[in-house]
Each structure stands twice: as C-alpha cells, then as structure tokens.
Image 1 (cartoon, rainbow, N blue to C red):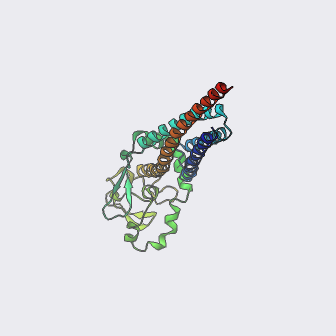
Image 2: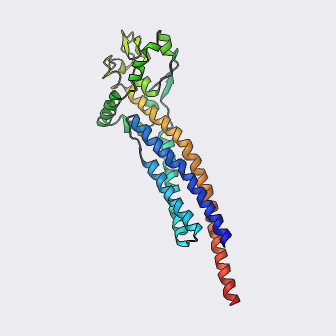
Image 3: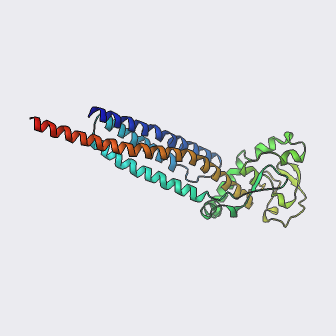
Length: 274
C-alpha cells in the first residue's frame, strides 16, 4: 500500500510540474497583451493555470499522506479543469485560423487585411467603435511607432526601410498601405500618394504622429495579427502541457484505483486472519 501511495504521489507531483507552463504562459500572455493595448482573454489562461497548480498540489498532498477523500476530490477537479483547458484551446484555434497577412512585392514586411481574420476576432477588436477608440488611444501613446521614428537614421534610403522587418502593428498602423503609392520620406512621414483611391485607408493616413494610420482598417488588422501571433505562440506551450497532463492524469487514475484495490484486499486479508 505504501508503494502504491508513493507511485500516486509521484504522478501527482508530475502533474504539479506540468501545470507550471500553463501558469507561465498565462502570465506572459497577459503582460504581453497589456503592452499591446488589447485585452483579449487577458487573464483566463493565468487563472486556469493557477487553479490547476493548486488542484495538483492538493492531489500530491492527498497521495503522499494517503488522504483518500482529498485524492477523489482532486481527480474530479482536475478532470473539470483539463476539460476547460481543452475547450480554451479549441476556442483559440478556431478564432485564430485565419492570418489576414499578405505579401507585398518588393517589401520584406507583410501587410494585413481584416477580411482574412475570423469573424469573432474582427468583431471583438474592430466591431465596437468604443473599444477601438480605447485601443487607438493606447497605441498613439505607446512606443509602437515611436521606435520607427527613432530609427530614422538607420533608413538612409527607402529600400532599406522596405526591406526591414516590421511587426504587424508597425506595418498596419505606422505607415500607409503600399497600394496607395505614397512616397517615402521617413518611416512615419510619407508624401504625394500616387493612387489615393486604391484603398480606403489612403485618405485616413496622416503625417501627424498622433494620427498616422491609427484610424485605418489596416491598423485594426495589424492588431488582430499581433493577437493571433501571441495566441499561436501560447498554444504551443498549452498543447504540450495539456497532453502531458492528460497522460499523467490517466495514469494517476489507474494508480489511484490500484491503491484502492490493494487497500480493500489488505483489509479483507486482515479480517480473515483475525
């Protein structure tokens, strides 16, 4: 019986370790999105990770000190939390299936269209004018485009800027769409559009650093591209942690069942001997 308890305790300790990536991913995800001015599911991953951590700790304590009631509660709670984690992963993959990015000839960076993203993601960020006003104000106050302004000295020729690696937000919010045909002056200053009717965003562009392309559809698409990239990176860690938790949980259930069987057998044998 002591051997079975030790095995169950070791399995629950492994489950405890598997919850750490979930907590770390949630905290990274929350802080990263806060820096990018959007709060798409900002804390659920972190909260779910903490709950998994606490439940796994309870399971380890219950197994180590042979608290059968605590172990039973642990198995039920862990099953519910793993189900929630799986549901979150399915939701994340569903709303981030479209990238909205497209290549531009002669440019190293990519540009973004709202139509390429899922309807739910578009509705969350771009569908509510009041929400976008808050995001826009946050972007204008952030260093997203200011970094490009400070790097002007590195872009001596327009081609150097065209071959730079821009983030989705910088590509969508800090410059006009390439289709407009604006002439490059500096990363955030452009002049004389050759095709002002090529895109609705052409008229929305302003050289005012407080305006730039923050009202452009391309800026909203850039925000969606940023959120999608963050979710995709987070999903890698979450999928790995979920698979590990499922494996450890299934083995833990088997070990717990065997421990109960051994306990019943031991009691039966003791009663017969007496």
